[in-house]
Length: 199
Image 1 (cartoon, rainbow, N blue to C red):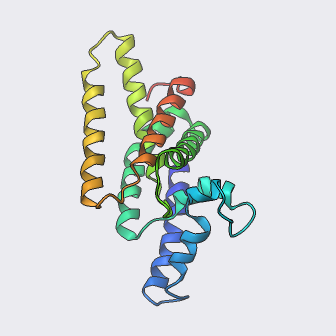
Image 2 (spheres, rainbow, N blue to C red; image 1 turned 180 degrees about the vertical axis):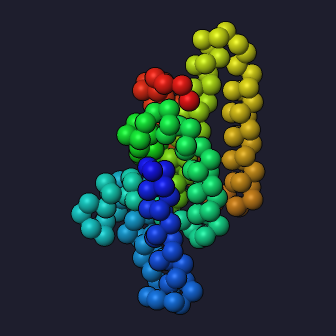
């Protein structure tokens, strides 16, 4: 259930903004306003003036429920529905939600620390890379316990790096790889500390 709640929490804003983009309601400015008020702006951690007092704090979570369009949302939704169920079953709903939250915040921290971009960062991929990090951390632990080769873990890490590089190139440098890195590390660390059950 927690996975579907997260998916719907991302779907509803995208449906509202898509309808506005298509002229079904509101105005075409709704998407840009949503990004202005709920996207992650690294400058707000410096000397930028927020649109409302809590924005520098709220944006650490709100950015993860906005997307750049239906394709962006669908890719992230498919990833969530693929990676989420086994992790949620193993960790339980509350620890899974904690993993998702920690990864979401970790992704924002990674972006703030490593990206020079003045544009907003949006999307759930920080949290999703956190789920991937948790999966690989479990695999690492399992292979260490069984004294098996870590080569599959290394291969998966290389594949993720190549995927990010390819997407960064295809998107002309507009990929927030810093968010992916921050989320991945956060998910890995969370699983190491709190993932006691088998994934």
